[in-house]
Amino acid sequence: MKNKLIAIGYWKSIYENEFPDPAKFEDEKWNLKEKTETIKHLKNGKSIANWMGISWCRFRCGENNMGNNCLTDGKFLFPEKLIHYIEKHNVRLPFEFINHVLRYEKTEILKDISEYEIDYNWWKKQEGFDFNKSKESFLTLTDEELQKFENRKNCY
Image (tube, rainbow, N blue to C red):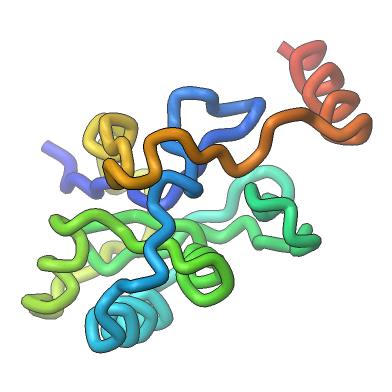
């Protein structure tokens, strides 16, 4: 049986509509100690996979190079630029992850993502915070995004 990694920080897009919207996780009042520890933890993640293409910030802040590496701490799998959302957009991750960060004990990290089973189910069920239910990070596609989406669809 393969080891399991729990995905977190993969955001809704035209390609993955089933993921959560980062705007629903904004929290400008997030405890600074927790935020700092979370950033430090994410920065210590180990690269385990590279995906096709570069991601872009779902808040459309102009950051179009969000990387293509996936990192892990041995329990969670997350995009390399998840930190961007925390630092620039005050995104607070769910309590379960923060609790993990604050109680983290170093875990052996295998060399390749193929050695793991990736669980996206927990993350897909995350809805953010009640005070952000009506917020959305992006409403329409740019012409370039629409073209990329059409090109990608035609590859299958």
